[in-house]
Image (cartoon, rainbow, N blue to C red; front, top):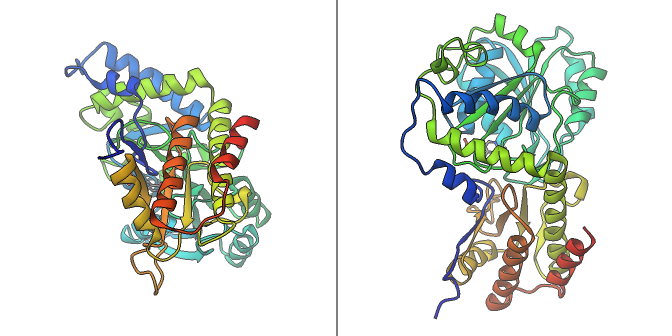
Amino acid sequence: MSLSRGSHYLAIPGPSVMPDEVLRAMHRPAPNIYTGELHEIVDTILPDLKRVAQTEGDVAVYICNGHGAWEAALSNVLSRGDKALALATGIFTHGWATVAERLGVQVERRDFGRSSPIDPEVVEAALRADTKHEIRAVLAAHVDTATSVRNDIAALRAAIDRAGHPALLMVDCIASLAVDAFRMDEWGVDVMVAASQKGLMTPPGVAFVFFNQKAAKARAQADLATHYWDWKPRVAAEEFYQYFCGTAPTHHLYGLRAALDLLHDEGMEAAWARHAALAGAVWAAFDAWGAAGPLRLNVADPAHRSHAVTTVHAGRDNGTRLRNWVSQHAGVTLGIGLGMATEEDPAADGHFRLGHMGYVNAQMVMGALGTVDAGLKALGIPHGAGGLEAASAVLARA
Ligand SMILES: *Cc1c(COP(=O)(O)O)cnc(C)c1O
């Protein structure tokens, strides 16, 4: 007997669940790339992406995953030997910093640990100490997908401004775009990177670099941009192929068009509010379960928790045991512990993550939480009572 037959739920922080609308839009023969519908779709996707990012700036589209967007963003504004300041709250800004180093950028790293957000005062002090203004860029993740820490990007901009420092603010929104509220222009973000497969509900394979006028000016001095990563032709294409530096990602574009339609039908404010309510339900369940036993949310302060993903401490081996149980017996895949290894737990088996980004609704989150509840009982993992009641109460109030 198995309880896992039926639709499987991939509750990991990307790739996220793909809407039927996106799948249907992609299920088609190869389209004409010279003229017609595909060209019209690109003309509508670019302004719609800017609306999602809340920017009047430009957006360059690349056929790659998030790692490619990291490299694209850096190489358009920096030169070999330039300095950058990387602010880590997990693993992803470290990853971006490593890409920068491999490009020949000198990176100064500040690590705020695995459970805390960026401290703007530390950033202000670091920038004030750079009296010659050699630091060209400040790198940060809006949400670190390993730790589920969410950073206050407006506060980071304010710290840079208080220091009177001209560095570009470059933000990784790969996990958070269309999930956690983000206002690129209002918050003074100069460069932002995103990818298709998380809040944008489209398969991995296209990624985006948004940038403003200040970043466009930096492009003029940057010597790292190669032919392929150069964003200039991609935002001012005279020929259609220049948008993608070659063949367009035909089917991704159809899928993305459908995903953007879903987002715009819902409205950005409503999409952010939905994710906030679903995340609140997840937190309430784990708070109740954590009242007795080893379960604990990684980020103590709700103000610093992402609405896209939740990282949980489950106690020695329990993360892996629980993931295996819900996968085998309940048809749910949870995310592995990432970047949470310690000396006692080198494989981070004591952690797991629940993704709740993109095409996710109340029944999916309650279903995932319900199967976690069953797994805790089946495996004899001690936990407080009332997790599911607490989660449903949050949804009822929303
Ligand atoms: C997923 C993710 C990445 C990496 O994206 P890939 O598409 O796997 O290259 C980078 N940063 C953040 C915050 C992410 O969530």
